[in-house]
Length: 61
Image (tube, rainbow, N blue to C red; front, side, top):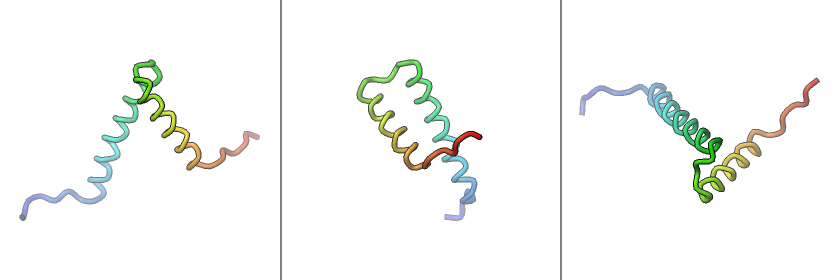
């Protein structure tokens, strides 16, 4: 097992890139109304959870 090794940072960057592409595809399908009702509910729930984790937004001055 002496094959090439991918550095940890590169592995995370690759995984993040794939995730970002998948999320962009889901967002495009959601915006275009191409998701089934079940999947749309899942996306809405995940978006709500993400907003709650981000915390309150600062008010504009």
